[in-house]
Amino acid sequence: MALNVYKEWLGIPEDQCPADHYALLRLVRFEDDPDRVRANYRKLNGHVRKYASGQYSKESQALLNEIARAMLCLTDPQRKREYDESLGREFETAEDILGRKPLADTLVERGLLTREQVQEATRFAAARGLELRDAVVQMKLVDVETATQGYAAELGVPYIDLSEVLPDDSVLDRVPRNLVKRNTFLPLFIDDDTLLIVSADQPSQELEDELRLRFSMPVKYSLATQRSINQALSQYYAPGQRETAVEPDRPAKSKAKSEQPAPDQKAAKKKKAPDEPLTPQEQYERKMIGIMVMCWSIFAGYLIGNFVVGYFWEGAAATYLTTVLVVVPTCLWVTQVYWKKR
Image 1 (cartoon, rainbow, N blue to C red):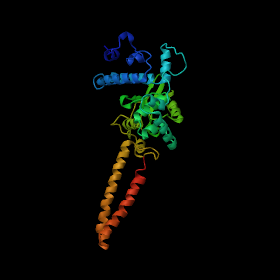
Image 2: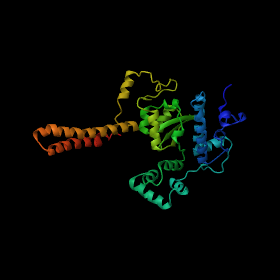
Image 3: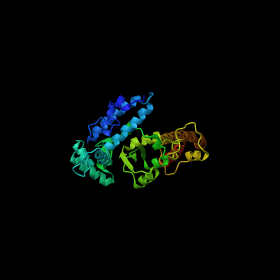
Image 4: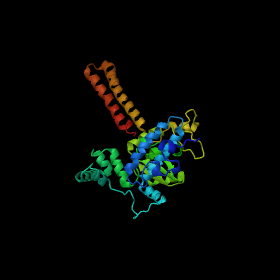
């Protein structure tokens, strides 16, 4: 007998299956508080993950994806309204049920900032060409996660903690690495014939058009912090993974560790596009190598000055001058050329 995960894991009676988004997240129907939606999602996510490594790992993954799609729908004002109407809810006005509130108002209402601080941050942002979200973070008035959540509310889109969401592999495989790295976004799921992605800012129209052509469906985006997206890209799009897109009717090849890539694929992996940004791991490695080069330049300068130049010019001045002539150009090259590739 097949396991009924809704009944056994979530306590949903059989006569209520298949459950709607509200029953799935154990919410009162038509719950309008996005914070409560996310709180229930986090609890259920943690509960279902307990079964991820056992004999029901596939069922667990499928249910995790399902509750994630439900959370994304109920925290997206437009999609929630459409979903509620499909369940028979009637609205008195045409306004978004969750509303769209400016970031400044959200931070003030939560007691995180005063109106004076908002005005100061607004002037700071205008003087530097920044979004208010980035200004309040740079001024250390709020943390980046809080600012991103408020910005998502202003745009009327969901906010996602990527540590709680596991993207669909079949969707990841259909988007090549160079596209996600160039645009800094992560594809998540396909839900209700809509591709769901996450980014740190509003995706460009060019990106939406390209994804729409690839998947033949509309695109909806949500927000996450830049750091969490970079970490996710390092995990799901590490060098050598998903270099090319996999068509829907073809098996995914990116995960087969033992598979030998074709010669042209090997060449593509070895050669990095000039405008392709480095991953956080590559940046870290480059930084460490640069520090080692500068340290070795000091040692090399001392040896050259003491044993080569010192043979013709005795005295400490020879060693000192030679060391400076070796170290300074080396440090300039490392900091101004080698480290500039970001």
